[in-house]
Length: 142
Image (cartoon, rainbow, N blue to C red; front, side, top):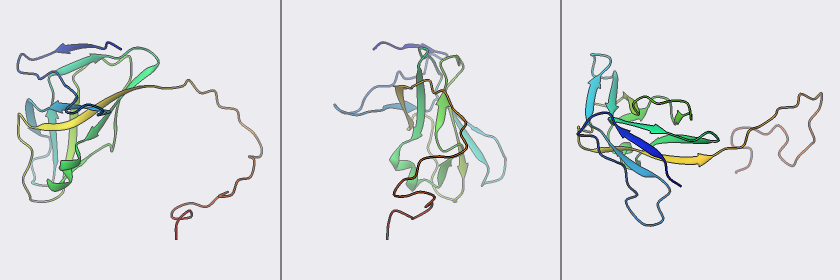
């Protein structure tokens, strides 16, 4: 499948799969902006890239696993790029620890593009029962 991608900045890096069999492509930071000025504020990394994701597909943005060593948490957990969005892909992290921060030029996130079903919801008075039923947090483990 081909996806159109546009460099919004000449220094932007076209994402690639790092290894055969990878599900996501790495995205590289070309800008870093402090959104809040205190040390525990938001850090926003721009990729300088815009995607044209086809209708029926979604781009999902995840932090790279190495982000867990940085004191950064992706502020919206998973980013969603809808098919109609044509703006720059950015990652906004909450800086929660006074540790090293990713720099411009570092791979800071991943994108995976997937098809999604169009769901039609049907309101009902009752749902069928299941083994789990209303069991919530930790209800399936011991």
